[in-house]
Image 1 (tube, rainbow, N blue to C red):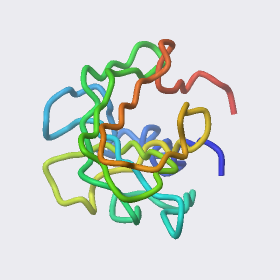
Image 2 (tube, helix red, strand yellow):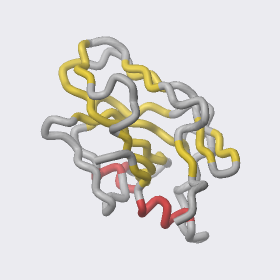
Image 3 (cartoon, rainbow, N blue to C red):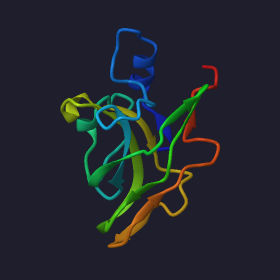
Length: 144
């Protein structure tokens, strides 16, 4: 699988009545988070997945993306650190939009397994740092 934005999140963006979709709220209850997922018997991307509970084989706790910013059509944010990760092969990251509700309401935003230097990697007890491209994490600027 290559990198992908989850289609059901993009659909929610186009529906004014849908809530729980913005990425630049910046508060703890309404923020973008990133999770590490395994590749061996791990999570498999599906365009039908919509909420965090669809993800399997998450490694550790999701971490917030600091300083989330939407500038035009580009989403960017600060570096994310996962501390003391052990015992598995990390093959991808998943960004989701967390809220104050249960994880069954946290919208999936992006799956990324290519273009990340160092993935896949075997976690050996150290920190895993996710540093985004200087141009942004992703853009919605391309026409359909």
